[in-house]
Structures are given as structure tokens and as C-alpha cells.
Amino acid sequence: MELGMTPRAQKRITNILENHSGKIELYYNENFQGSYACSIKGVFELRISNKISESLNALESPLGTVYIDPAKAEHLDDDPFIDYQEKMNTLQLKGRSGMMVDNLRVVNSLSKSL
Image (cartoon, rainbow, N blue to C red; front, side, top):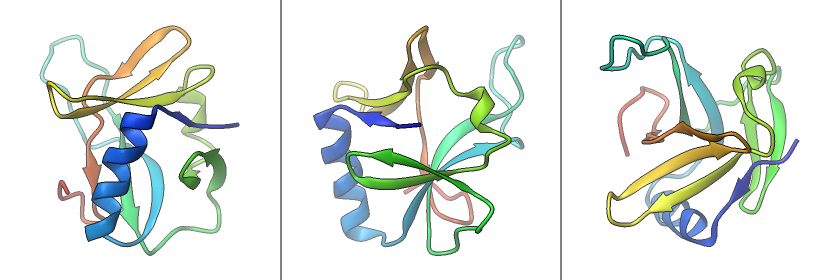
């Protein structure tokens, strides 16, 4: 499977990686609870870490390999890609059926926003 990225998203993620070294994981944070009553428990985040488990699968992207837990890949839509909305300064995870995450956080291995 591939993870697409718009040129704007590539630039934004590259800027983050200039100050924070590591590999990229599309991490499914099950401890995150949305603010809406109907929200699903858990959300994808981009985690930048030097500790990547060998059990993770690889997704090819324009920025190289992005890792994902194979059990969480089922939460992805067909043809997933990351976009960047400059007005909102947010990365967004989208798929063939539309928006999956409207504010894709980029975090370190301690889940602190970067």
C-alpha cells in the first residue's frame, strides 16, 4: 500500500523533520478521545521516532517509508493521502471516501506535538 502526499504536505513534513530526526510512523493513538459525542475512540497521528518496531508494515510515500501497525491499517481508506491546509496550518489524512482526520497531529515518541 502507498501513502500519498500533496506537495504542500511534503514540504510541511520535511520542515518538521529538519528539526526532529527519526522515522515516520502513521500511528493509531487509541488513547485519544475526540471532542464530539459521536467521535470514534482513536485517531491517526504522524509519530516521529527513532524506535520503530520490526512488526510494523511499510507504506511507500514521496518522503520514503512510513510505518504502520498492520492491525491498524484496516482503519485506512482506499488510496490514503496527506494534504496540508495552509490557512489552518493543519495536515489532513484523506482517502477515496473523504476526510479521515481533519487535524493530523505530528508527535514525538512521547506523544508531544512537534
